Image (tube, rainbow, N blue to C red):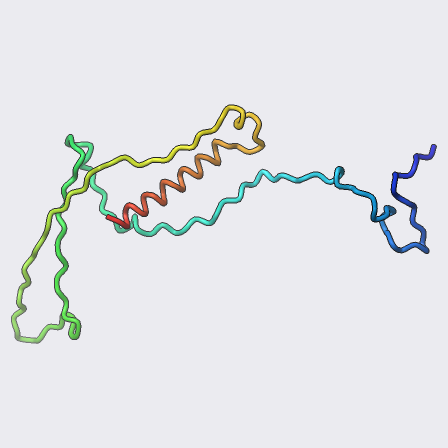
Length: 151
């Protein structure tokens, strides 16, 4: 039993090399070509977070009530730009004065939220909650790095 030829198409022969697929160029195959969706999510490259390694973490906040934490900041010692800190044999070192200042940091809340609907959770081909958690974690890391840099 022979099936009918597709509409708009023709069977090619060795003499007709214009179409190797057997279809002429006027046939539209767009309904047959589907869009492909990947479950892989593309995230933008995350910068290297550098400033937290230089931060001093204090734990006094949970011990005593209040929203301010006091710190002592010591002033750097002066360095001679031409000789550095060279010593001369037999000469006594001149001591430098130690100076400090008190700084105060007020604790405040930081945060970000993402809202998703029940429809999105049920209809999405992706795990929206996992992707949202990843984005919130990256936002927290960048925010903490900026806070450490600006302090």
